[in-house]
Amino acid sequence: MKNNLNGLGKAIFTKYTQLIYIDMSSCNISAIDKSAFEKLTHLTELNLFDNPMKTFQGNIFAPLDELKVLHISHDLLSTYPRDSWSDVSNLTKVFTYGGPSNGSFAEIFSVMQNLKFFNSDYKHNMLHNCTFSAFKSTPLEYLSIVGRLWAIAIHAFSPLRVLSSLIIPNQDYLILSNTLPALHVFENRQMDELDLSNNFRHYGEYVITTDLLAFIGNICVRKISLTGNGIRLIDAAALQKMKYKHCLENLNLNNNDFDYHQAWLIVDFNLFTNLRRIDFSSINGRFTNNIPIQKRYSKRCTLDHLDKSLVPIQTCNMEDIVIRFPSSLEFINASLIHSHTSSINSITFKGIKTLKMFDLTYSSFYDCNYYFHGLQNVRVLNMSHFKCSVLNPEFLRSGLNLEQLIMQSSSLSIGLKDDHHSIFLHGLKRLQYIDFSRNAFEDRFRISTFKSQLDSLQSLILEGNLFTSIPLNLNYFNRLSLLNLRNNKMAYLTTQEIDALEVLFEKSNRTMTVLLEGNPLVCSFASLDFVEWLFTTKVKFDTMVVIRVSKTMAILHQQMQFTITCEL
Image 1 (cartoon, one colour):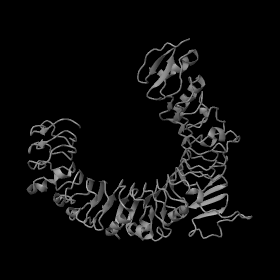
Image 2 (cartoon, helix red, strand yellow; image 1 turned 60 degrees about the vertical axis):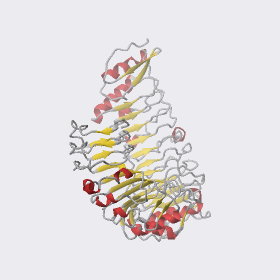
Image 3 (cartoon, helix red, strand yellow; image 1 turned 120 degrees about the vertical axis):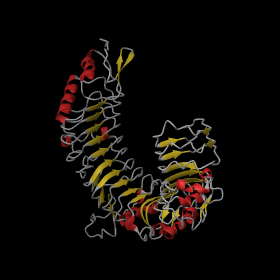
Image 4 (tube, one colour; image 1 turned 135 degrees about the vertical axis):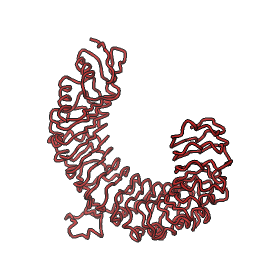
């Protein structure tokens, strides 16, 4: 709020008895009258962060029977009158900052019998064995600690008997080998989340041994995040020896620095039989360059004679890579993984059954002159920033059930020039959304480019190209309802294009939207029909369309009607 309220008197909220949320953070409050909240019987959330008030003068929370969420200084909360602690017994969420002065959270937390969520900006360098003693009888399920930790005592989390989510991010000074052992108290427990993101960087411990990972592996946890920890090495046997591999559903390892010894890590993702989401984006560029490549064989090997359960990754020769993923996966983020490998014939993904999203942004090889196999069960594929100036027309032939294809900035204007028979999108009959933004297209597409999508395509994104007119014949599409042509080189729409858009509007039986913002639209003799149409059509446009009239600019809002005189 950042007001200057100083003190809160007893009549301040008399007219606002129905309030359910009040934010009085940074309001320079130094005192609160005992009766200030007397009329706020419906209040459920109160924020008192960043005020100079040092102590409570009375039981001000007594009237707040519905209060569930409190944001407050820890040291201020610790001064609440002991004989009125029952006033906070219904709290379910508490956010604090500052303190505790003695390294242990205030005893008032012991009466919060409904507290499920606690977020603390902790001001000490160490979590002691006594830090959470006050929570021994609380049903705390979610704990987030931010601040500047240096160490965590071995039994610090012992009082947290039902904790399900532990979030300790951005602690550069924590030491890996002194932090993971503190998780031993959760052994054989079921947990929802363990987030240790962006830690451990100051002291340079970047190796997770089998013994250290066991402190995580002995917990039946659904979600693990170790992102941004600079991890370079995980012992080969560490993931295999995790006790509760079957519990893991979400694994985030992005923004680490895995070196070339870690290629086997992709192999072991297959051990997590219930894994739904995996993120290993932005890992060190040398990682993919060192997926083990066998010597070239005169006879190409096949997978038929291999034990696929034991060897989820096979490289049968210098040109073929096969990667097996758990069949349970729904989301894979493998973006920003750079490789300089150029001799490749195909990449085959095995095991994919119901993959909703496969993000490969910026993870291109030297070119796109190879095949992707195993995309039959992928719904959304993002291959933006691929180097497709050299493109195999059958690059995506296995993506028969793709619903969304995103290939921004992938040099497709060059790569598709030689696709004379429009093979690239052939057979992808379920595509509803195509994004070819910023590919430097300037020529019209071939009539047959989208022939397999005429009955499925709903959204076509062509933003940031070099088109001077609509680059395809709209008459053939049956369901197209969004055409994004922003930031191209179009001066106006022709009568033929206008008519086609009106037909699409009627045909799609829904709202038709055309986005033209950022084009150098002009008002001239040639564009008179277009300008007039803007005021009469039911087709929707951007919030603002700008048209040049002589040397001035006219702004046309669809909700407003006025006369424009074009320069003839």
